[in-house]
Picture 1 (cartoon, protein in one colour):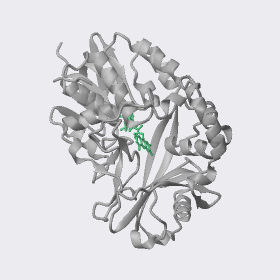
Picture 2 (cartoon, helix red, strand yellow):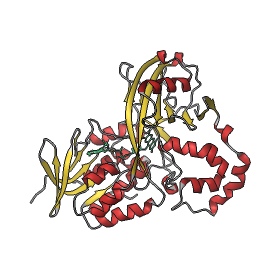
Picture 3 (tube, protein in one colour):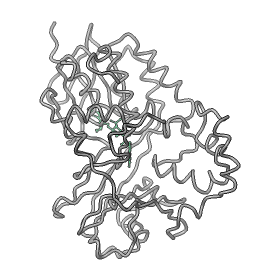
Picture 4 (cartoon, rainbow, N blue to C red):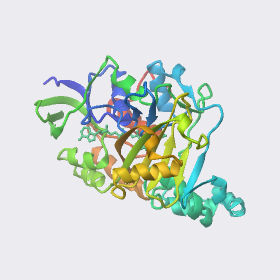
Length: 406
Ligand SMILES: Cc1cc2nc3c(=O)[nH]c(=O)nc-3n(C[C@H](O)[C@H](O)[C@H](O)COP(=O)(O)OP(=O)(O)OC[C@H]3O[C@@H](n4cnc5c(N)ncnc54)[C@H](O)[C@@H]3O)c2cc1C
């Protein structure tokens, strides 16, 4: 029987939108179903109400010219020429420790780093915990006093047990693109442009009750709007949601996904008049044993009137009012000076060393099937790691894309 779609993708974060783009460009009838009212997931440019479009990034903030799969999508959509370089005067990160802003260098043990660094050539990364790998190549004290906090700031969770190979995977750079980039309107330009592709159907606000593997395809049952059928299905949702949705018959994949934890992050966005802040321009704060993991500023793309910040707090520690007071203390400004604020719930997977075994179990359970599973919980959490997985799964389902050379 003819199915409604050749390919259905569940989840409209960058992994799902990438998977949908890769199949749509092969000419396949593709539908994306997203639970939230907007697309983009962790790519979430937060525009403040009443500030003339001034925004700050509530999730991801930087893309690099090493993001090859992202760049091929941007090429397809005519976005590569629109990338925006970061501030000409480079703004750096600061530490927030014991109620004070400090330089990164203040926590670095230079001699220990110099003595340890040659070990990088003899220390394998694969299968190692972050604490063991980086503790060895930069020294235990450097890991304790600086790196552990920096990594925690990046993945918004304790990074000690995280798989070392999932952080900072090296990839070839594209010389024709600026090293680190964003867009004048923020990174949400990318998911929004994919979702707007004419050849794709995207439905937001969809609650999926169940997925049934049915003969040579799948039935996706959507609360309140019946069901849609497809030949091939891609799940691009966080691991806990995937474990709930993986259909019967793929039990190994369901069990493996269900065993992966999630880090919950309470993100607070704040905007101020630039003239109300004495704080020098900075990329953000790396917190040392604090109630927040990190704060990312909008100073990398300065605005003449406003400055914006996103504080990523540990969950359930401070009330919303306490978070505001704490963030303002770290910025050295009176909370009365806030001109706009917002709250966002972010989530990131909590992978553990040995994660390659989990991925193997999932891949074994889905091998030779028309079910693909992708996300930021396979190779790593970066946008490019997410898209690399989506691309691999797309090639498995539909064969190598004949129009692609990379
Ligand atoms: C604060 C923060 C800063 C970051 N900074 C960077 C950065 O600078 N550079 C970088 O490369 N990466 C960064 N990342 C990581 C990167 O943004 C994410 O890992 C990546 O965007 C994840 O994409 P995804 O599609 O795999 O998952 P998500 O973005 O989590 O998308 C999953 C989607 O599935 C939807 N969904 C969930 N359940 C269901 C369901 N049952 N049915 C339908 N839909 C469902 C969700 O609503 C969501 O839209 C950052 C992440 C965070 C949180």
